[in-house]
Image 1 (cartoon, rainbow, N blue to C red):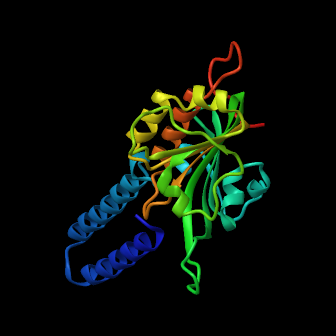
Image 2: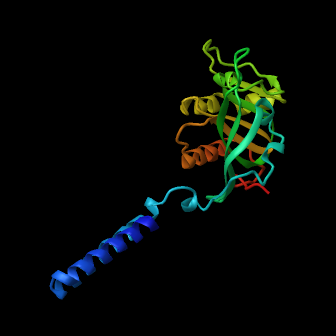
Length: 244
């Protein structure tokens, strides 16, 4: 129960008690008083249960109104592909042993001639990979219509014979890209209903996709972890390491 609701309930209880003191038996007044206190206590306790809490508190993450990390300065081609990019709704911290930055990337979407550009938004989740990855971008082809330009990397044609190919891949190392974005990786991306794309570059990995009306923070984090598990690891590494 919110503080103002508790205050209102207490105020009403005081008024009721004042009236009852004039017309009712003292024992009845005491019973009413105890009942009101019990109801307020139970409501306050119920609202404080972990399953009732929302936001980032339960996950141990912090929220920022700005971007104290200078995320747009990171060497990520996604940021250069978006016109007038801006980081919003930044959430960061350690989640299940992994340091993460989850945020909305708003930008001016491509528009038809003479029409003003509208703001669009991608959900993004960023973390550090364990091994170093040659720059590679893999995303649903529909993303090209939402961003201003393709990555400044070489397009990699699919080995698949399917003429309805729905994924685009760009990379600086074709051999490494084909080994990474293989049939298994493509199947995983499709299993996400073509909702997500990713970019890996050096030790940075970014998961991104169109931002829904009600973003699922936990679902995004789980998908980010799944991505990191599919990226190359340093020899002898046990799992993804947090950003420095």
